[in-house]
Image (cartoon, rainbow, N blue to C red):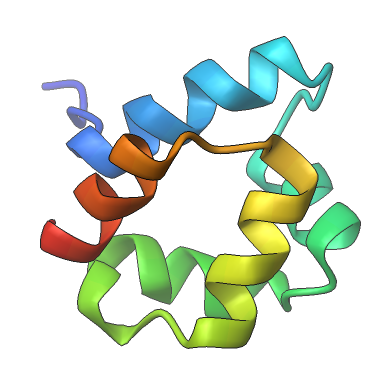
Amino acid sequence: MAKTKRPIEKLLLYYMIDSDINSFRELARETGIDYQRLRRRLEDPHSFTVYELLALDETLQLTDEDLLKILRE
């Protein structure tokens, strides 16, 4: 059975497509967040640090509503 993506992964994929970022590995490189750390954060969105959220926002240009969705995840 295929693994389903979490809502946060789907949300970030939407922004990644818009920003021409092809993978979470590339997103990690663009944001300066270690890839394994990014994967762990996607598993538990409450563990994102302010620095990481700011890096994601700077890279992906998240809307305020979507940034709040990540925090509430």
